Length: 430
Image 1 (cartoon, helix red, strand yellow):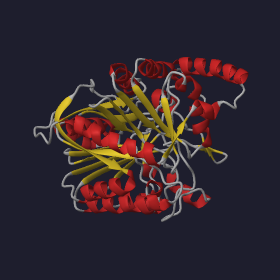
Image 2 (spheres, rainbow, N blue to C red; image 1 turned 90 degrees about the vertical axis):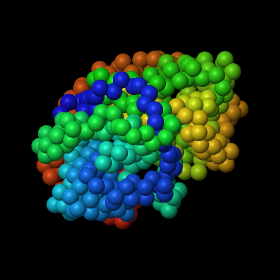
Image 3 (cartoon, helix red, strand yellow; image 1 turned 90 degrees about the horizontal axis):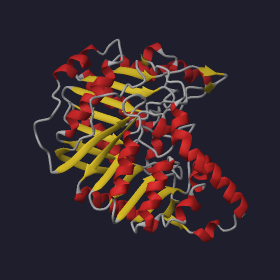
Image 4 (tube, rainbow, N blue to C red; image 1 turned 30 degrees about the vertical axis):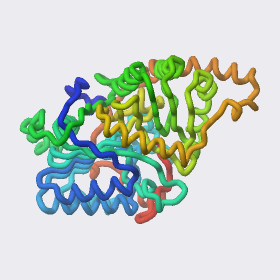
């Protein structure tokens, strides 16, 4: 399988006539996805970075088995790094029902450690019958539900109907068609599926934007930068893993200096401490330009959303960090609609008002100014050059492998798996 498993004919054009709904956290996302799978008539396609064998994973398992049992064609793609510990019983329960389970770049462990860290399949997409799609940042794990506790994640996805779904459908079918054995039905579906859906579902203009390591290496970042340059009133970016490239930082600073209200919502209670450390290295640089920074402190922030002025918005899987912007396979939906922008603004404003601490330059004053100068010098050059440097990493050809041909199912016996019905035993930058 080529490393550009998401290469497509997507030329990032606006498609009108759509309906879009924002889904917040697992409480809204999981019931909608599982109910839609239960209603599927022909086809269910799921791509996810993380699938854990906990209460959420078991619900997805049951929904996919049930769909396959009534003759629906079901394809599930998981990432080999993000979903490494599924039991043999879990996998065989799906494949025996007729679900095609594929693992993106399974990799091998060395002394118990996973080494296949880079160029991951980080997308989170569901397409049902070619008519309804879900895109966002929510994985299939119990830590996306509030009852998980203090480490429950704050996250977002969108549900889409209308002509944009045809483009997303073509994209996921093309990814499956590259997957070799067992993809014949989906290859035929790719040839037969319409490239443009006929029925309009609403008035929303939307664009499906992806990132890969061949043809679309910087599409998502490019759309962010263009929207920031065009902003005249307001920019709000809520992103879990924030360490973007030099050009995006420069655009944010320029926007703030020309009077745009620029706000960043970042992690205050990170799932990985290095996340906050990396982002905080940029605080002086941004605050002195007039950017307002808010740290979300209720629990770990996992969202990847943004809005500009009163029309432009985006929701997806892409963080604003080196992995997402320069290495991983990602997918975002970009929206041009005042009503959706207003809904997203209301959710972000609520976070800033009730769940965030605003960072002030006084909070950073205790830091030795000489060290800050030295650190800023190195951070500046890291930001300036890391996209090109990461692009030089080996572009191995990831495998899309049937799950029964991998060793995922053998890992349950090593004690490294996720307990069924429990929470995750390890954290991914997801």
